Image (tube, rainbow, N blue to C red):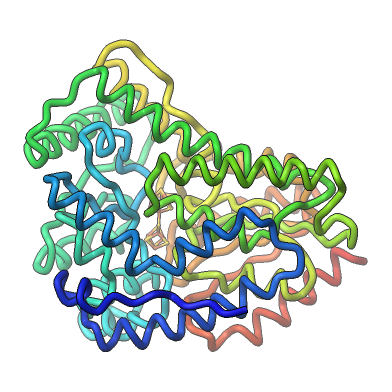
Length: 427
Ligand code: BJ8
């Protein structure tokens, strides 16, 4: 089957992309995508939309965003689920995820940033300075946050290249921090009001909340369909959808995920899926896997197991909770804060809720084992692995710890470790 990530050199030139380099990168991406995704045996028809999205990743969606900018709409580049996209959407803006998941731009970043920071930050920063990410090129500004040290210090460097606004995220979850986060959400709202020239009112915000809630609900539904014995979709495909959630138009995306869910429900009813072969079911927990980081999913699924859940910000942490609908602006802003406080990122301390949540998701997903995944140099997730491992041992949950970056160098070694882990599960 042919597959090509499309090119639009004229558009790329207009937005300041390094055309030669992006053209080469898209050829590599096309090949990788074809090998990893299009050769899967049982693939739902509804995945065609998401294939199209990948094919248009550097063209169609970028064109839409450029047109929106010409209409005066603000484009926000974000790196974290704490950035309230409900407010961006409520003020007619576009919120896009800029996390980097590719090794290709890591060496660019390492010419400036230290090598000993996480690859997600290096990849993204490298995309910006080498001008090969059209999304970075069309963002009006970056909304960063003070979550981990790697990110918060990189914003100071990134700010030399693109205006970087920083939202403070408190590291605890007491009432004091709730109030602090509320003030930060209000400050973000004011920043966007200034940029968009629109005043936020309760009607607009409720609309924004409903749009993003619908997107999260569709993802919840999709994830719940992986809990069936008949597994109607691969983990790789779901991870791809979870990544696309960060840059597609939210309403169109929700519609397409809902359509896919209808198809998957039909497949489950007819017994069509991976369940027939009784594959091992594996849950992943840990750091986000940004596009196009499919490394672990690819290894696990090539070895015949299927991934049934991602406890990650590109996964359940993004969509497990909705924003409660309120009828006045202040309460609605607090409801946004309260949802954020339920995102159990490892930057929080103490963070027992995450452990409880992992256990709950593990049970619901009917997984046979858990792989804890951390990007190299991500201190908070690496340290939190200690507690997760102890909990898994106590609960009798088979556990494997994987620390990796985006380079292909450790693929062989990872494959051997995953294979041995799957063997113990089979045993
Ligand atoms: S809420 S997980 S999106 S901070 S992997 S850059 S933590 S060193 S991405 Fe995250 Fe928000 Fe938390 Fe989610 Fe730092 Fe770790 Fe790198 Fe990370």
